[in-house]
Structures are given as structure tokens and as C-alpha cells.
Amino acid sequence: METTVLSHNLCLTNTLTRKKEAFEPLHSPLVGMYVCGPTVYGDPHLGHARSAVTFDIVFRYLRHLGYKVRYVRNITDVGHLEHDSDEGEDKIAKKARIEQLEPMEVAQYYANRYHQFMDRMGVLRPSIEPLASGHILEQIELVKAILAEGFAYEVNGSVYFDVQAYGKSFPYGKLSGRVLDELLATTRSNLASQEEKRHPADFALWKKAQAEHIMRWPSPWGEGFPGWHTECTAMSHKYLGTPFDIHGGGMDLTFPHHEAETAQCQAAYHQSPCRYWMHNNMITVNGQKMGKSLGNFITLEEFFTGKHPGLAQAYAPMTVRFFILQAHYRSTLDFSNEALQAAEKGLQRLLQAKPALERIKPAATSQVSEPVSEIERKCYQAMDDDFNTPVLIAHLFELARLVNAGADNKADFTEGDLASARKLYTVFVEEILGLEAAGEDSRLSGRMEGVMEILLDIRAQAKARKDWATSDLIRDKLKAAGITVMDGKDGASWKME
Ligand code: ZN
Image (cartoon, rainbow, N blue to C red):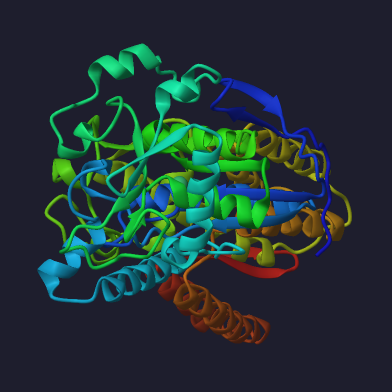
């Protein structure tokens, strides 16, 4: 694929420094990106979609700039306990118990569902999608390395990370902006495993499996299972090396998950996991965080079918994608039916630029060559500025306005202008934002073009033999059907109202 880099000055906001930094991967043009994927025990909802779409954009844009990106996104199928804690039932095992299924049956089912819904939303699959349960050996090696460095201890077949010992040499809490002393004072300490921990803020690297625990593996400390945080450190190290370029995830993962990953990586490999941390912000519903525990989360299936009391109608997958992209990834995204309906209209307006482009008849002189190249420059500038998709979309609406003016014979496009505008549309709307007319729609609009050509041909023949009654009848009937026919010196053109 041919790529044009107009201004290659990509900046992204690093969660660690909270500043915009120039993106300079050491192994250029190779980029390693790791994103925390789903825990597969329930249907994907809007929060999953936001994270997947956010890093899909990063993946697509870096590839467009000419980088070779190895994108790793894991699937958590073991070790993620209730309340994101070191206590309670494994989320997948609990669902399996309730549904009378094998835990791996639950994990496979919801991993399949995740893929189906993300595919429909135009999210590209990552380069590697490792499973936590497939990397138990790597996680055991990680725990052994941390023990050997003196930053962990074993109690009754479980291994815990020693946050205080680590805190003497490294700034635990730096990523999430937390202070260790405050953490030690405020961590809940009424849970059983807290009795085993030297300090309440310590977290499990390996947990001893109780008799009822189905998912269990042998280890140097007896039969058990890995702690939630170990998989990402072990698998990112295995596939990307340490440190890799970008670590992504939802903002709710900053603490404890990413703080723990940083500590594990520093303890075992004497390195931070990555050069840049990127976190997408949360979805709110009337200002409240959308989440399962709050009972206000809406699954993607509900969005696509409209079957949820909070939804006024069904929304197409591309509408939901466009809605997500209309907010910058670091801002909260507030859900409302009004906002989604506006996104639906906006998306249609943008997508109609493509058939409108095909209707423009090239002129000999250009009126738009400067505005088109200016829009192109501003599109790159927006993406280079920390993947600012809302600003990019605003510039693409400018392009759509220009194209519509061309289709209405109000602006002259040369062959060269048309080629530039087509390329701009393909690169930014389709390749980078991943927006496409639904398969059915684009097939339909293709047929529509054909039918209109036939009708306008018959009308032109009627006019040629001065059969004004027939030519007016065709024009008026089309008008009644919402299609305006415009007569120009190069023949007739049409547009939908
Ligand atoms: Zn993770």
C-alpha cells in the first residue's frame, strides 16, 4: 500500500507524564502495541467498543504512516476475580457455575461474541490475541523472577507482590497518581487473603486453588492459578519485548492493573513495560459511569437491535463507531439517544460524499485545488495531535460540503481535484476512521446509480424528440419520490433530498 506522509510529527499524551510527547519509537519502523482486552464472561458493551475503537484508530493510523505495527490484545479467560480483587470467585468460573457450563465453554462463547460484534463495528483484529490460560508457564516464570529479586513472598501456596519492599526503590503509584502511604491506610483489610498479606496494598501474583476451584495448574507453590495482573506482563514481554512502544487500555485499568504491571515489569525485567501509556476515558450515562454494577450498561447487541428500555431505536454498528469517534479518546463520552441520533445523521452526511463525488463531471479549470489540499493538511494535523478524531471529522465535513457543491455544479473540480478528493476520502474516512456504508446500503446505492442513469437517458431521448410531457412526468415523479433532477449544459444530474 502506498502511503504519503505529509507531516510526520505525531504527538500523543503519555499517562505517565500527563504531557503530550513526540512519538519516537526506538525500533522504527517497527511499533509494538499492547492493549488490555476483554475478560470474557459477558456480552460486549459500549465500554468495550470504546476501547477497541480507540486503539483500532491508533493501529490504523500508525500503519497508514508506514509503520509495521505488531498489535497484541489479550483475552482474559482466567484469574480475574470478582470486584477486581484478590478475593472471591473467578468471574468466568462463576458464570460457568450459574450456567452449568465448562469455564472454557463460557470463555470461548464470549470471545466469539466479542469478535462478532467488533467485526461488525469495523474493528480490525490484532496481530496476536493471546489467552491468559495459554501462557501459564510464562506467568510462573515471571512470578519466579519477581521472587528471586526479593519483591514477592510466598504464604500458604499463594505468592504476593511486596509493595512496601518495591516502594523503597521505585515509585509505586506514579502512573495512577497515588501515594503509597495513603494506599496502605485506605485499602480494605477485612478479606481473608489480607491475613496472608504483609501489607494490605500487596497484590496476588499466584493464588492457591481451593478445592472447588476448577481452573488450576501445578506450580512450584502447589496447584493454583495466576493473579489477574501477571498475564499482561508475561505476554507483552513474550511477544513485544520490554520496553515496547505503546500500552493501551481503559482509564479504569490505571489502578490497580497497570500500576501492578509496571511494578511487576520493573521488578522482574528492570524496565518499565512501555514508552507510552495511553488510556481511553469512560462512557457516562447522564454523567454517571456506565457499568455492570450500576445497572446502566447497554450491550452492543441491544444497541444493534434497539431492544433496551433506555434506547429510542436500533443503531447501526457504524453509527455507534461514529458516535465514539466524535469524542476525543481522553474525554468522557456521554451516552444519550439524542447524541446517537445526531451521529446517525452526521455519518449519513459524510458517507453521501462518496456517491456525490462520482456524480461530479470534471471541469477544465479548478476552483477547489487549494481548499482540498488545505483540508488534507489539516486532517493529518488533527491525527498527529494525539489522534484528535473529532477535529478530523470536522475537516472531513468541510470536504463533504465542497463535494456537494461540486455535485450541484456550484464548484469546479478538475480530474486532478477529483482524484485528490477521492484519495482524501478513502484514506481518512475509510482506511483511518474505518467508516463504511453498510454492505447492503452500498450495494443498494450502486443499483440506484444504474437505475437513475436509465431514467435520465429515457428523459433525454424524450426531450430530443420534443416529448415534453414525458420528460416533465419523469422529473415530477422523481421529485415526488425525493429525487431532484437538475439540467445542466453537460446533461442532467440528480441528487437525493
Ligand atoms: Zn492488562
